Amino acid sequence: MLRTYQGGCHCQSVRFEAQIDFSQGTARCNCTFCSKARLWLVKVRPEAFRLLSDENALTVYRGKNPVALHPFCKRCGVHVFDRIDMPNATGFPYININIMCVDDLDVDEALSAPIVYANGLQNDWGNPPSETRHL
Image (tube, rainbow, N blue to C red; front, side, top):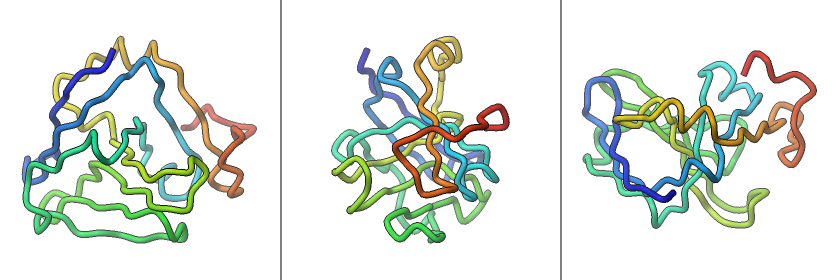
């Protein structure tokens, strides 16, 4: 069910609002960035995401993936979301929200949603990695 959520970083300097349908699934990736940050993500279209705080509260890290922007809070360092530009495997730009930054997260709802595993480590985004227990 599509619902509007709010969320943010630890210090609350970065705040967002997004329309999320957890029944559509969540994602975990084994790329070096996602696995080191232990990210659990939910994907939304850019039009379903609104940054409520000033962009100046963020700083951006760009890793090896040229279409992925990894903003994080300048003050507390929490990684709240990613912006994924084109071209990418989905064919459209999207926002990956770190579900642990969603206020009032219903953990049961998140755990009952399907999880898609991405093999970003081998740049094989359409297939799951052989090992997922650590993600």
